[in-house]
Structure formats: structure tokens, C-alpha cells
Image (cartoon, rainbow, N blue to C red; front, top):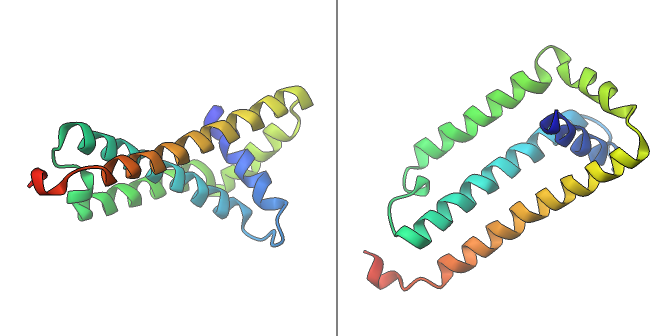
Length: 132
């Protein structure tokens, strides 16, 4: 339910833009970007603290993971136009609950992006000559 609301929030965001075509795909791509940012953040923090091999050392595995996330999102939202029912479900929410949901989505998105930026900052502070 919460994940569907995240989709609805991104969908509504893209519908308010200049080009309203394929908003469902833009919402799915936004959600995939958040997953990739979250996984990258976790891998960066793992490498910073443990100095061990991470997902970024296996680009084929990383591509397969991204493709898997994309396929899962396809079956969750666009397969048989499931996204249309999810949009109708959330359009009838009360204004107060919708406002709280929007705030939660903004905070979650900002948290993931800021933690990704911070993880790259931490990676920049590593003395790379000591790592290998």
C-alpha cells in the first residue's frame, strides 16, 4: 500500500509537468532510480566501513540487479495496466492524509538522495593507496 502510494505520488508529480505523456513510465523510472540510489548508498557505506568488495566491483551483477528491479516494477504497475487501478484508489484520499503522504514521500526521497551524496563524500575521504 505504501509502495503504491509512492508510485501515485511520482505519477501525480509527472502529470503536473509540461509533458503529460507516459507519466506512469516516468513514475516507474523515478522509483527505479530511488532503488538504485539506495543500493548504491548501501554499497558505498559498506565499502567505506569494511573496505571489502562491493556490488560496484561486479558490473554485470549490478546490471542484472537493475534489470530485475525494472522487471518487478513492470509486473507491479504496467502489466495489464495495473497502474490505473492504483491511481483511482489513491485519488479519493482525504486531503489531510494525502498531505501527510506527500510529506513522507518527499522526506524519503530526500533522505535517499542526501545519503547517496554523503556516501560518495565518505568515499572521497578514503586514502586509496592503503586500500589495495
